[in-house]
Length: 145
Image 1 (cartoon, rainbow, N blue to C red):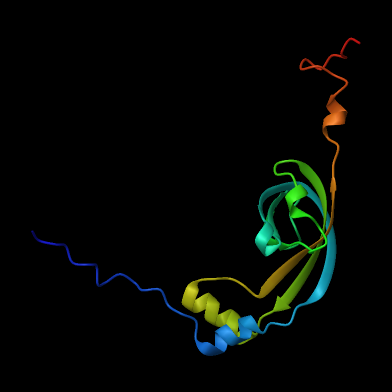
Image 2 (image 1 turned 30 degrees about the vertical axis):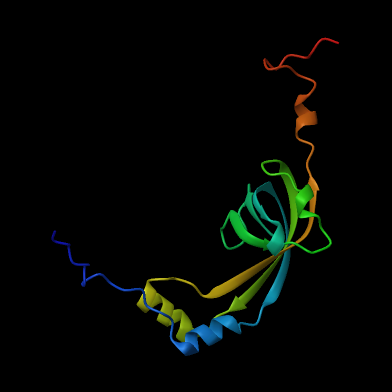
């Protein structure tokens, strides 16, 4: 039986050089903004105290999904409901990258990135969307009581 050779022309994944990895790991976060947005929880990671959320309005960096949103240990993730509309209060921290790293990422990986963001959940409130519709039936007509 003849085996096909592995494609030796296949481009192997490149690692970041030590200087770039060090800069990314030691980025200083500042430029703190607190933002309120509505959306819903996609997934929860109780053991890591993180959640993934989808927002209805984009953040200043144009994203509408936040993966790995840090949740304070004081909040009970087990009580969070997936797919239910919440009003989120999110702290957004921005860490600027050096011009050297920005250029390196752009040329070596075709990645247009000038900063790293970290997100922390400050508060969330369950929005009572259903009560807006409870007084009408499926046809939009008032229900009889």
